[in-house]
Image 1 (cartoon, rainbow, N blue to C red):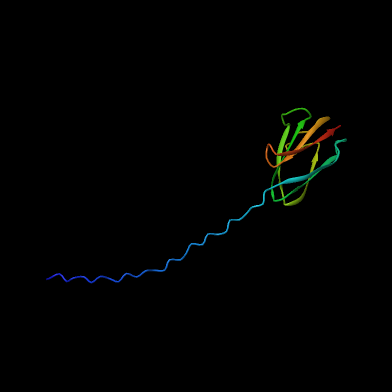
Image 2 (cartoon, rainbow, N blue to C red):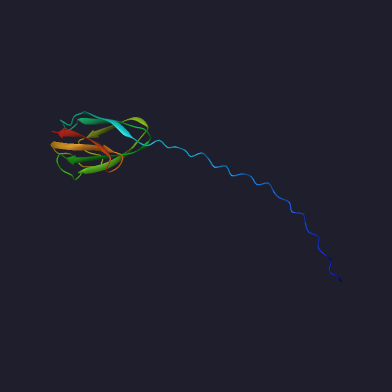
Length: 123
């Protein structure tokens, strides 16, 4: 048997589909603003209403410390929605701790360092 010369195959190019890069999405930064505290803790059954607004839904961090103290007595978080939000705080905090009479600082923030704080009194 004699080898037969092989015939070259024609080269066919397949069309290459271009890769489309999606446009980058710009996410709006999250801001906490317009923090207001209403009500009082003058009696055992009284309530404080903390109102605030958010630009996007996120977790909000609350902390309560004695006035003049740097160490927080209680820290908890709650889910906030975009727009106006309201949280009710009683003498017994969501962490189970009960506030004794005195002056306290209530801090509301998105992180441990970025906060807005208000002074409250418990009698």
